[in-house]
Image (cartoon, rainbow, N blue to C red):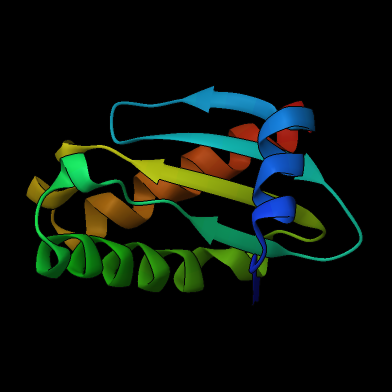
Length: 105
């Protein structure tokens, strides 16, 4: 799995991709040449420690399910609800978000 690096890549996916709204996150997805993931955690989620913990948990959940999907680029913006979920539920929610993104792709 590759990660999105530049602001241009994030902006392109947010502009051209399909929007998926869930109770744990808002995601933008677009079919592409390879699988790329980007996570945006804003300051409204809390301190830097909290944001980094949320980002690490989401990355691990994505790593568990991403092998089922090919050639999709996703920008994920988590909400405060992510912090209260246990890891199994988080993985299931991330999986369903990616499935919706691929279906709409």
